[in-house]
Amino acid sequence: MAVNYGSKRVVTGAHYGLRDWLVQRVTAVLMALFTVVLLAQVLLSSGPLGYEGWAGIFAAPWMKFLTFAVVIALAWHAWVGVRDIWMDYIKPVGLRLALHVFTLVWLVGCTGWAFQVLWRL
Image 1 (cartoon, rainbow, N blue to C red):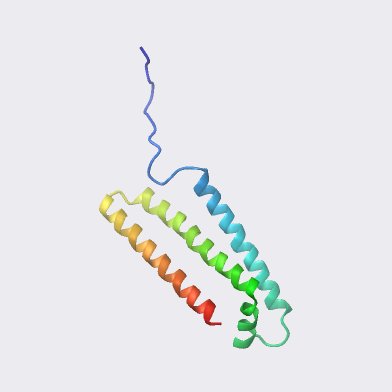
Image 2: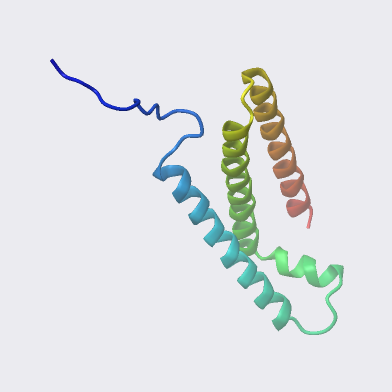
């Protein structure tokens, strides 16, 4: 007859695991690289940086693609972090579900707004 000692750990809740940890690190590195590229673009630009200068920086297709990837990475990074906070600290299930839905709607709205601004340039 087998005897179990100690409590049985239930691995549910805030999605404990390598995937979420890796998502946070990879998206953070992508955002850091984007920041370096953007700073290089700004520092290497000639003259004062007005609207035309910013529009010129983001007009190149490779920069639009990189910005697109970073906006998605930022939303994913924020979702993993905020979701873990809700899962760890909000115990009532209904409130937690409402906060998850609000967070998702907010992130999708912000992402949509960012794409609208990006493609308008």
